[in-house]
Image 1 (tube, rainbow, N blue to C red):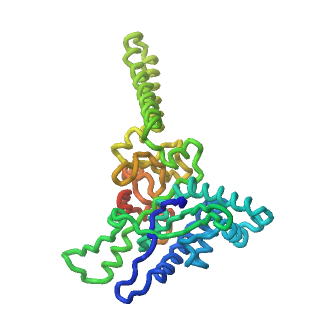
Image 2 (tube, one colour; image 1 turned 90 degrees about the horizontal axis):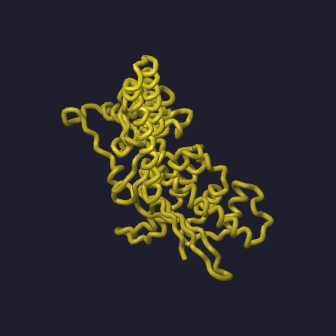
Image 3 (cartoon, one colour; image 1 turned 90 degrees about the vertical axis):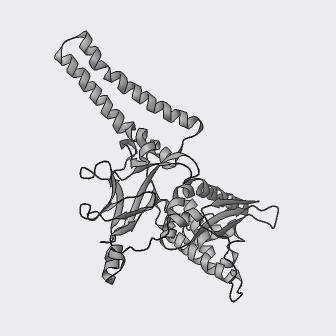
Length: 368
């Protein structure tokens, strides 16, 4: 049985139509390139210190050394040896073969169940941004009996048609229908950026639920609606204190206290749940305070078909490389000058290098 984790992909490139060269040679080049690029990305993840990422990188190392076996797979003892030789010295060195296989399987399951779901979208966008039209698929081919061990495999398959359509480069549109100078093209390119959706790091226990994607289905949907309705009810009842106070007493201080309480409860509700209440209309917004990091750069995104497989709310972070100085551009609040808008601000020059933010096309152009 083959257990596959879809990260997107291309199992094999077709035979060359002109010279009849078999696809294996082309596949080898593509697989090595994809494995190397993915390993570079994994080395920069905060989770790179975890063993499940070490198992992934060990597999990628084996693939780069022997790409012909990538789709056939490597057994657990080869993967463990690569982990031990390159990442964690002495790991499982004195264990029995069955114990080694069990450890590799355990961390593989953590990789597929916990790490990949958070990294999938960012990996896809990184590779698309690099002009790569395929992505890795990791799979585990379950063995059976002695001499037929479980193997861990690496393959490729193409992006879906919609992924390619969204990320197609639009042609440059010159002024007056013609390009008078090459510098115009260069200048235009320096005004544009492409955003990458990153998973939220070091989230609190409450924010972690949204960092993994809060599915709006079943009991979760009812809980979400119940929390919002409860908050609205509390604010509504508090607001009634003002007219009720007018009927009961004519005291100015009593009316002022009731009005102040209504304003405070209203502000607390909006700061805590207001973003989530309006998210179905806004589609993406700055995350509420209890999800935020120190940098206030976390967003909440409403995801639903057809762009996504199911309806959910996900805490995300969008970043890009500044074409002007090479710094990191992070999508965040537009502040007072661009109220109710999200913009990309360069961390090196947050006031001077500001870009628009389109989370659907993941693009932006310079606005200041």
